[in-house]
Amino acid sequence: MPEARPVYRRVLLKLSGEALMGSDAYGINREVLARIAGELKSVADTGAQIACVIGGGNIFRGVAPTAQGMDRANADYMGMLATVINALALQDALERLNAPVRVQSAIRIDQVVEPYVRRRAIRHLEQGRIVIFAGGTGNPFFTTDTAASLRAMEVGAEIVLKATKVDGVYDKDPAKFSDARRYAVVSYGEVLEKRLGVMDMASIALCRDQNLPVRVFSILKPGALLRIVLGENEGTLVRAGD
Image (tube, rainbow, N blue to C red; front, side):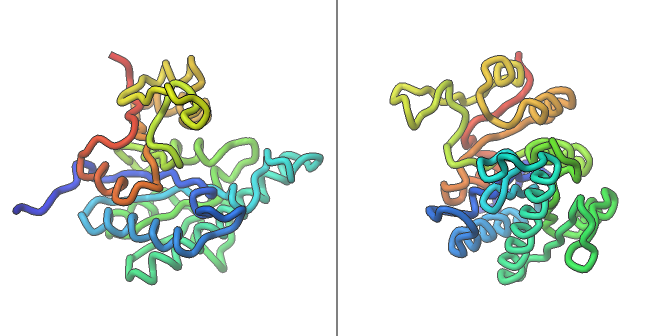
């Protein structure tokens, strides 16, 4: 049988910090980290170029209850530093699989990671390296979802792959309502109008303005990331309406 070929040349994966916790209450679950690293490497092995924006909610989030009473900008900077910790952990897991990888941060920590430089990031991708973007946008008051949309546009990704704990976008919370319906395809406008919670509103608006599709899928489903890159219909596709 002929080898399966990726349908995307370059993709950007948005990975939440919470995805690294597994069933733990906080922090990084090593088994989950190793599995996610294997998923990324399986995509890179197809020849597709993959970048990843990672969150920090498993360690600290600027809008979390633990940040109440803190200056919001300071809390957000703490959250950005948490994303660097997660990025370094994911880098280590990928290197254990002999996958070429680079971490770039929007906040300069030159002794630890590269600063974010768009052209350098594109060059890394062209060389077959997995690129992990940390530090969000480098600015407080912006989420890592927004960073994912921005970085995807900057490096010329063809799609944003939003990894979640559910297998797509539903019309209501499937954990609370047994009759919740999963969308196969939904428009940017419907996501914004109904506040479906795919990503934050600013990131969806950016994707809409640049006509950048978003696919929402479950990172808990083994092989889902690879199947998407190979062209299979996993989760929910967010795109322009008909």
